[in-house]
Image (cartoon, rainbow, N blue to C red; front, side, top):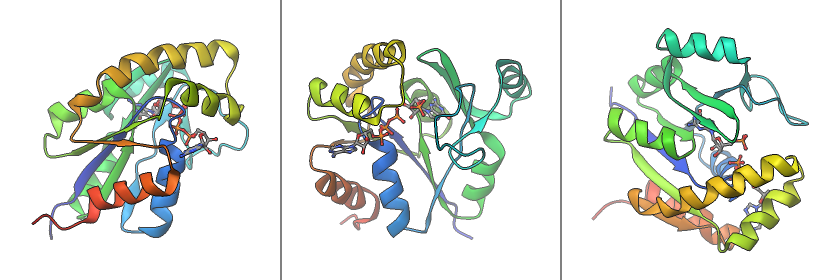
Length: 186
Ligand SMILES: Nc1ncnc2c1ncn2[C@@H]1O[C@H](COP(=O)(O)OP(=O)(O)OP(=O)(O)O)[C@@H](O)[C@H]1O
Ligand SMILES: Nc1nc2c(ncn2[C@@H]2O[C@H](COP(=O)(O)O)[C@@H](O)[C@H]2O)c(=O)[nH]1
């Protein structure tokens, strides 16, 4: 059986990664989304095992100590990580596995899976990024400030990625992602 492929989506918080991915997964059932572990508290409507596996810090440390995370990072005061076993199993089954992760995690994956395709999603402007985080209405003022501060560092690292896509017009961004993932290479 053909080996699968790892696809990494990174970009500042609020740029629209999750929304783009939800749409992409609906029209491309061949894609599998990795479900991360986090110490962040669930937002309204988030479901255990669907959006994240929610754990406390001690449990998260245990996952690190026992090598169960493929990558992990601290972001805006919380820890996030990718469970190793499901991803490795899906790749062995020949699947296209998508990770939606922040910059430090993407850098770790670049070391351990150099064949992974890495995409970076940019906002059309810093002002629009802030507007989107606020419209989402899920984060405290403190969390918004931390995320916007971190966004500057992440955006400055966009050049590290294989493909950079600006999420201005949603449909155009989605089309650009589909081209990057599925257009045949000549
Ligand atoms: N092209 C777009 N134009 C306008 N609004 C958008 C666009 N794409 C996404 N949004 C909106 O921006 C908000 C943030 O999107 P989303 O939660 O998907 O971001 P994210 O990058 O996944 O954030 P995080 O990394 O914090 O999870 C949502 O309200 C979403 O509907
Ligand atoms: N390094 C990792 N980053 C992850 C993972 N899962 C999500 N994330 C990123 O964290 C921020 C914040 O997410 P939010 O749900 O609190 O808004 C965002 O950039 C995600 O892409 C992970 O497993 N590893």
